[in-house]
Image 1: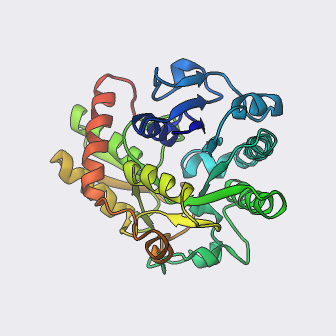
Image 2 (image 1 turned 30 degrees about the vertical axis):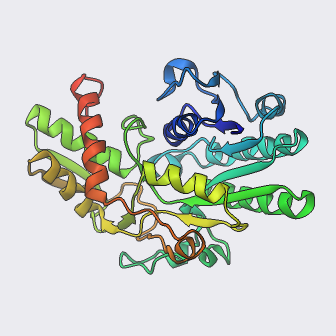
Length: 326
């Protein structure tokens, strides 16, 4: 069993990952810049560092001291609306990524995992809705999502060079739209699956069936169930995969299809309108899982409708508490 630091532990993926590592018998330290009351999950079995800004190098040193492994998930990010309107904030995450990596090296951390993103992929590869699934090599020549994607790509390169120059064990996964319960579902940082669940839940509760969808709804994505994302992260951390690799579902759908799935779960039919000037990101994106299957004999396999049913049930309960409105 290992002493493991999870950064971003107060966030969505970090909270689930910390829970899984605790259940596996590891000693877990969680760190997040957010105060305790804003953590999505607080695991009392872990050592939790609340209000811990890892962009400050001294804090990164404290957090990584005594750890065998680090899963660095900390980043200032959100859905496409947030990413397109907060490019500088997204870029500033490079301070956290750099300081956690450097202090992990200083403190002799044995294994380091970095959570990258499909936003690193070149925009010219994602101009059509019927997109060819993205292979790992499609990140270059580089033209990633402005702001957020550039920070992720830079931090990938940092991990590579720390492995080359210092012999560090670094592993990098490119997440493709991870979704599930215990995450952001309102306020502007939520991603499409959570937004769809919130809008359908509110329609179901209030009887107001009008719903606004960003764009024309024909843009395509794949969405990865949280448990697949957590399992894949641990598998990649402990693998021989020394290069960035996709961690995502290959089940591509349109945003219209995503809403239809949630409608079917809720048993209602919405009256859709479309906000054509909303932030959209790329036209199409999907994960090519050839390499992860080849390397691990495994890939995310949870069907979207099954994961969305669990996500909708959790978000419906949150909406029913009266916590939000459209």
